[in-house]
Length: 197
Image: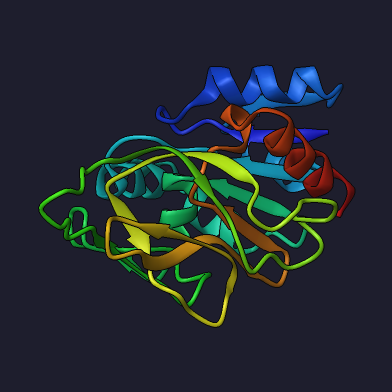
């Protein structure tokens, strides 16, 4: 069973639909015991990272997440919340990933938010088993995690090609800046890989 953490934010419907498409059993929950008992945990997120962190802390789910020993996948803002801190709201993160989240500084020809299909590279096996380097996934974000020791996939932004973390991993925790649930066959393979970790 996959527990999708419900903290009154996030891209819940698209995540639910993606899990249903690949035949996964899931439940949407804010109950700590249900989350602890789950085989896998998803932390989705869209919107303002600082506000999302505040909601997570108000619910007490921040400490529940940090203590999990099952595979956990944060998506987009869900990944950013698991970093050390974020410039969006100047908030302290959960401190799971050794990364800082900062806002893009666009060049004259660049647009923020960074939106659309981008290729991913430097893929580590596990989450990216069977995924070819250069595969395309879907991004929608204005903030990013710098490259760090926890980086397991990279992509580039803007005309100058600044590289940043497309995915992170620390122990049983995983995060993708992109949206696997919106990334077609590649995204479905990534979700299947997560379920098999």
